[in-house]
Each structure stands twice: as C-alpha cells, then as structure tokens.
Length: 414
Ligand code: UD1
Ligand code: F6R
Image 1 (cartoon, rainbow, N blue to C red):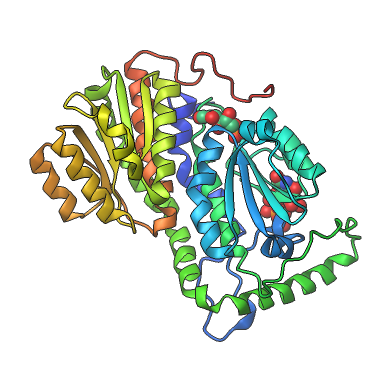
Image 2: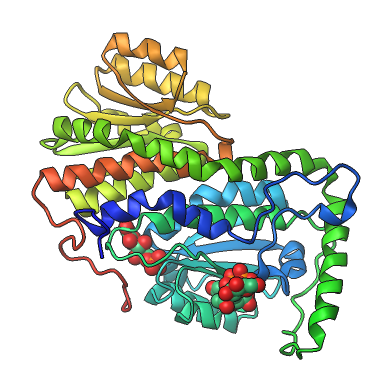
C-alpha cells in the first residue's frame, strides 16, 4: 500500500511528478501549434469547463472558497486568474464566508476547492452560493463527492487517493488545475456584464457533435480576443510540460531536508516569509509544520514584516525566506538584509544558480536551491522541499505522520 515508503505522507510527496502529470493528462497540448493554424490555438482544454466556460469569462467577480490547504491553493493561483481573466478575484475561507453570510450575486462565479469534496464548511458555502444564483464550479479530487455532484461544473484533479491527513499532492494539483482554468478562460470579448443564464438541460446524445462544433467555434472566438496574452499563455503552457520533471529533481533535496530537519527538530518556533505568488507557499509550509511536526509555525506576508512580526526576530529564531526569481525578488532581498541585521538564523529558498543568493552563505545563511520555472508555477516547486522538511521533522520528533493528533482527513462537521 505504501509502495516501499514508510508513510503515506512521504509516498504522496514523492508521487507528485506523476500526480501532476495525471492532472494534465489529456487536457494540455504541450506542443506549440504550427504558426497560422487557427484550429490548434487552444492548448488547454478542461472538459468540465466546456459547458459553462463562456459564463465564467463573462462574470463580474470570481470567488474562491475553501478551507486549509485548499485555501492556500486559492491564494497561490489568484494572481494568475486575475491576469488571465481580467476579473476581480476574491478569496474566502469557507467558515468565515458562512459566518458573514457574504453577499452573493447572480453574476458571480464561485469556485469551491476541496480535495475530499466533502468538507462541511465548503459544502455549506456551496449550498448558500447556489441558492443565491451564482455559477458554482468545483475543483475536487474525489469523483462522486458531494461537492463534485452539487456544483454546476468543475474539474477533477485526478491526483489519485490522498491518504495521509496532511494534504500534499492535492495542493500542487489544485494549483495546476486553477492555472489551467485561467489559461482556458481568456478575458471576455465583450466587457458588458450579463446575468447568469438558467442552466442548460442535459445534452441529448445527438447533441454531442453539435456541442463539439459550437465549442470549437467558441474556442476560436475566445482565442481571437486574447492575442495580447498569447505569448504569456504559450510560455506558461510550455512550462507546464516541464513541471513534472522539475518537481522530480526538486525531490532530490530529500536528504538535504533531512539534514535541515536534524538541525531544526528542537526549535520551538519556525517562521516562513514569502510574498506575491509565494505568500501561499509560506502559509502552506507553516501549516504543514504545525499540523504534523507540532511545532509552532507562522507563514508571514513579507510586506507586513515591519508591521509587527519583526518584533519576534532574534538570533534564536529560525526563518525560511522564499526568494525565488520573480517580480518580488528585489523586495525579498531587502527582507533578507533586514532579517540578517537582527541576526536571524536564515534559510533561503532560492533558484539554482542564483549567484546573488549564494553570497549570503558567507553571512551564515543556508540555501535551499530549487529549479526555476515561470513565476505563477514556481509555488508548485517551492512547496516540495518544505513538505519534505515537515515530514522529516515529524519523523525525527517521533510523532505520527499520517494521523496527526486531533485531526481528521475529511472534516464533515463544522
Ligand atoms: C471526463 C471523464 C474521464 C474521461 C474524459 C474523456 C469522469 C469523472 N471524467 O474527464 O473519465 O476520460 O471525460 O473525455 O467521468 N464536475 C463538476 N464538479 C466538480 C468536478 C467535475 O460538476 O467538482 C463535472 C464536470 O463539469 C464534468 C464532469 O464532472 O461535467 C467530469 O469532470 P472531469 O473529470 O474534470 O472531466 P474530464 O476531464 O472531461
Ligand atoms: C492540511 C489539510 C487540511 C485540509 C482542509 C480542507 O494538510 O489537509 O487543512 O486542506 O481540511 O480539506 P479539503 O481539501 O478536503 O476540503
């Protein structure tokens, strides 16, 4: 069952090259189409979005609703959705969404992310949003789950069973699924907002060929509108093809993370600093460390550092700073300098071959070097060494990896 691994969490971390491939299988055309061939412009095709894709493209607001790790996947992909769809994207923790009875409109699209597809708060939020007339889209790993059945449409992750209570491979597949959705949903041609039309009746079998024709025409029309984004989309899709291989080489950091865990196993607190796409990485790494290794841990938005968290920093505080090359790189470098000035013990997660970051080794920092990919996919790679770190910390501390205390895999009560 554990395929030669000691624990399910370990197995599931190491399965990620394959689970990512499964999430993309049959949905992404990795080859760039021949120039001038209009029938091959759609390189990402999620079957589950076909029926309601145009409605999503025309909506006034996208809401991403989830709990825990699934919420972090929302945070990691928000910027990609905003960039590709040019629609405001808001994030909602399902419990808070329900507590506030958040206002919902008929021209909202609500995405519900859930590995299990059964999480009570996410499910209740879905019922609420559906009752208020929003288009409800599921992103679930469990075919036939309540969320999969109750949403108007959606995408299955196809990442395979996740048994360890701490979610790992579902997280990276969720990031991928939303990124693929963003790539498939270019901005609307007409900016006038329309209301969510009544659901279509179930298609008759003979409607199939007409659907293919209609959707092919729709895809061609939508692709026409997004010429300005085509280069960026092609670049992201090319990197999707490289991603499983890059995750596989990131997994080679396993023994380095074991070594790091040896030096951190006695820590009483561990901080993770990130911003931009990698604020989610900081939150998710901190959640993994606290839930399985039972060490107090916080993910901190680096932009908020001076507004409180800096007070915690001294030479006893281990901090992981996520500083891979993206638009936030210079700002993260300044964060590193400010933390060093307070003598923090720094572990810098950076890209391989980054000479500027290498210079910090001379100042006592340790580097975790990962392969580089396009900015919006970098969180998929960056979380991998931090998953390994939390796994090794847990084993070294003699704790139960797959069944952390007080937690259940599927939270079916609020
Ligand atoms: C589907 C088939 C897959 C087949 C492929 C071939 C299923 C589950 N999937 O995959 O076996 O190989 O066609 O074309 O039969 N949905 C929701 N909410 C969710 C998730 C999904 O409503 O949270 C809906 C989708 O809108 C879609 C259906 O479930 O109507 C299947 O979704 P998905 O498995 O993602 O679709 P395909 O990848 O096309
Ligand atoms: C953390 C973890 C939880 C779940 C959360 C939502 O490792 O597993 O935070 O992510 O309970 O679960 P799903 O995604 O099944 O809705």
